[in-house]
Length: 512
Image 1 (cartoon, one colour):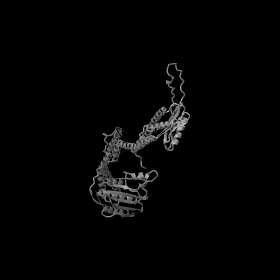
Image 2: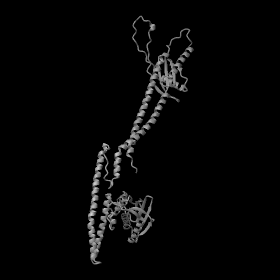
Image 3: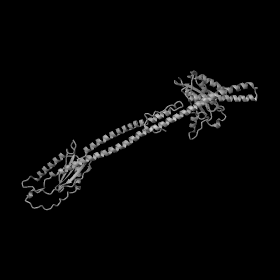
Image 4: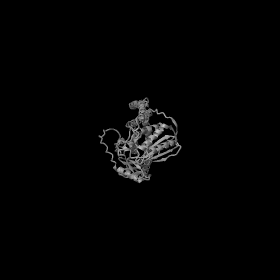
């Protein structure tokens, strides 16, 4: 299962937070701008409604010889037509704004209505309906009777009657959206509708700007968060890089603290102290193994020489000779263990010296094959390799690796089993695979024990299930030493995945 990326989560979370903030800010800003434009339009519309008052002449009886009512109506209609035309350029836009106007007298008779728009009929119906809902102006306040004076009554002003403040509404027809305001005067009624087309176009432009700028801002925020989080996690990457290099040969590495953020200083200090303790522990353990092997080497050599000399002096076939032979075998076995421990201590310290020569691996495999036929004639041996497989390596150490692999293939084989020897080379590497029939050496259960056993098979002194290996010689150092020798040659030794009833090890060595 692929684990989620903490850095990616930081970038996505930052983008999500910034996105929600920008979307909220954009929505609020859009509505604020829209409401501001509508409020400004309402103020202008109110101003024009109030300016419509001078267009109403006082209702008087026409004098004798005055113009005919038809001519008077025509003149009044022309006046309202001119007033409507002036409104089209008075609402804060550079283009002509569609405007509709309806004027009624005090008796609800139509004095003027627009007829120049395609949707005049529908807009006029909206205006007439709005006038019906508009309340009448309040009656004039009663004033106390005027004091007697010598002023001419003809110059007295009539009482001023102000209309009720209009309420503006937005209505929609099939072709447009309109902002409507209506007002009633004592002698007439006026309703004006202004198209919101220009406002809607401006708001659409602002919306498009938001739709383009917000994703770009989110992308910049995500990239910025990715870069910032990368810089913040740089000490963690350094720590990971050092941990990956922490082997027995890399315990001397430390993470510098000079350019580290203060939040990571304590973590890096603790990690450096842990590396120091591990380095001391591994150094002491490696030194102990090497010193112990060196110190035991001389007594074992003396003990082996004395046993061989004593064995030559006793009577052949006697019980003493048999016991001395058993003791000599154990001493030789102990000497082999000491040699392996010494090599392992050198490998731990990175001081395993290699005497590199050109080694004919085909020849070594043929020698191992002869040993197998002599030590285990009951096993069937199959080979698949060609002559001339040569590598640069230490011949004695590579022989020890092959001996360990063939020894395991013989010891852990079945009664009438088989061994397969395969080898092939590529331009860069040589692969030697030794497969043998065996019982299920590695445990397998529902909790992944098989994987744990596969990982531990190269551990030192590990021999798998003790109940199954009780009668098999060895202490569990062969595979560990063989892998260290392979890695000292810049190669590796791995346990392959095989069907049940088989065990396969592959030795990989570089060609150069």
